[in-house]
Length: 195
Image (cartoon, rainbow, N blue to C red):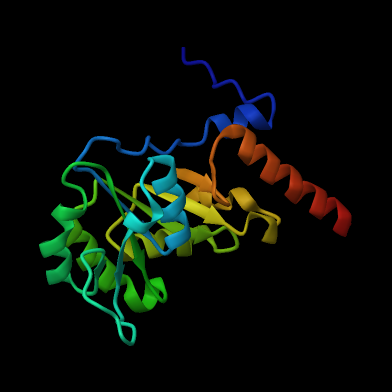
């Protein structure tokens, strides 16, 4: 006879059951790609001891007066040519900047394929429906983890867990059970205040 799973006794236990993002790669030669946020890329770089000036960027557009740089790519060819140099003797971090997943999803997917990241993290708003987050992540070729923002702008901050994609960051903080509980508690307090 199979026994029914024991339900969690509290929110900490419930959020501890959420799928955890795998640890950031720390092996020299690894590359972490962050889709949608330079800020998240900089936070991760700081956690790895990488100076913020060494966070590479991939963006579709060129800026006026932009000088050629080995830390900025605009297309698949540049990404394939320059990516190995970013991380030869260390972990590299690249921010893949997009206007929107709908407009730039195919471009981001091609650039990510050329970069060959060890781990891909996508920025998502906690106010966005889980189905839309999942579709955006599929548009860029899939991701390993989400970095959620705007947790205090929704009454349902944990809805993104329905995507099945592990959440690695919550408003710039590591996503652990305590951080989830704090976000859920704030949402419950806002909901109670509206009643």
